[in-house]
Length: 425
Image: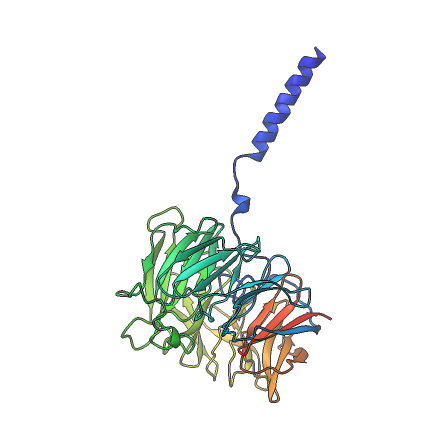
């Protein structure tokens, strides 16, 4: 009798265990890394990370990629950072240990020409990166997981939802890949007609300066809340670039559908668009020295605010709606708040020249002009006061941005390949 009771109880336990486990394996689907997973931090290009960064920093290490850089470092869920260098020989894609004085973990050489795009880390520290004519994925080692052809040079990639990777090339091809298999989900969408599929390097020389020969010169933005992808596009023969809204429709065909085209931005957009936390608003710099806010549903203008300078890098957006205007030569450190129909300046410092987008992780981190050189400044975002400043030794070229890791470490880099690692003081 006791034996029978034991067998029944054991069978019940096994049944309950199986039922509780279920059959789902969704936990292995790729999601963005906990750190600064790619350029501008997240798929919305917000330049904000949910990290409480330190107000006081200390310079921990400096290194060089022995070449050029044109995009921010990406940091993973562990202790890795990745850089997409443009080098004359040897390695170009590099993965370093951020907490071990930038000791190199591994490196490999990519086909050159795609320096404007940053690598993308997922939560398992798998890496996704483009080169002219192809998109590649690496595990946490240098051996390729998969490599697939595309038309053009992929801009910085985004994860749309778990397991799905958005790839938009500079020649206007839009694809969604399965992150595990490297297979295309749905069908490709072409934003530019008549592109030669055998010439993936055409127009790359125009991308850095955002000129007409490069149809898509900046990374797209995606909001999971509104399911919209926003892409800057300079169509062949057009006088100015426009913004294009694509609706992402999981499980439907087509997977991505073009919903609207907007020429509302004065002079056309410059740089990557940024989406608000609720996904309802697009923020983008205009070539008319103004910051623009657009409705994500139809691309219509909500408001524009004068900056009195040409912002050459995207704005950053805090979840509570604070907007820090982009940077560049002649810029002024400026914060605004979106009131719906207009924007008000919260604070402005015309004595501070931000040269990059302000990266937000509790405090703000931005590279500023410092005498004849550059410095990393920590900014208190409530009133814009400078909390801390660290000159960047031997910095040349121009700064390409600031990344904040999940452990509070900060990485700044310049176009001449100098990389600076900071730790909380």
